[in-house]
Length: 415
Image (cartoon, rainbow, N blue to C red):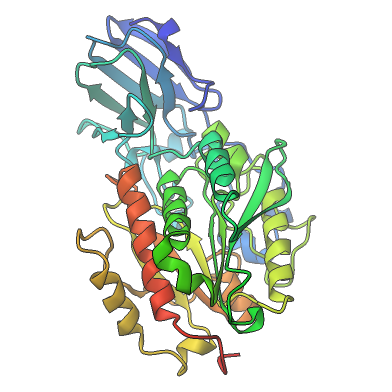
């Protein structure tokens, strides 16, 4: 293989990355940092500033590239380096101003066809968030895709949206455009002919915030897939579900792990006082404005799901904020946990629990809607270390199936 066989600016782009040959089949990949904030820390809203690092030079873009040809019959040793400032040389907690999720926290995955993915571990001498070595087995195909976490590309998302839009119970809303000119979507699924009036339907809202957490985007796809199945027909007659595969398609396309083009963490961007284009990153403002419009409608949101995928093996659902229906109207929480177990014979989902810190800060998308409107909010994590596309879709479907069976019947005196 030669350097010319590697594509760093294609479908799996790592913004600003470069590659050089060391010896035969031994290459060094150098990563660049994510975009830096266009607002100074002092200019950030106070609730964001309390939970935001002052510097992001230690946040690397994801390891993402394609070997376009000539991989067959070759092994690959890849040394990955990130030239962060010296003080970022050791992993520190976010409270200490450290790298919250260094790229070395995830075992990268690779694929010949973009469907079936295999994972590969860092060699033991890696330095968290700074450097590491990957040794790939001998390849059987000429083309190879590599990504820090199981990817959903913008093209994948567009293909899913086009497929879903053919279903009579689906509306695809274009809410605006990202700073990079990519369309921002919300998918609504419900049976318009159902016997339950919209004002009495349960309403669920699930959205992915961090662009580098592709597993969570496939979770959302799995939720939609199950909710459009024949099995879910009765649930669609009494439930409205809103889905956003990616709030930050620019980040997805560029390999930015957490931020948008303004350098703001997409999950530190909710504003309880109300959406404001001057005080929020562009895409977060558009999505919060849309969520506010849903809250003013005849069918406001019952539950809000912030979809993420941290480096663990299973989907992990956590209750963050308890809305009125969970304070006496529905069955106890244990019922939801039992439903998840009942529909999860392969053990893809961790035990359901409350978030260990309780309600998260106002600017987090998993806690912000609860602070703003008192509704039930959930955080989904996990699966970023070993989850494949098929299992991520399956896990998302299990989550949606259990959710609609827990929120049974009609929305009633909960409001």
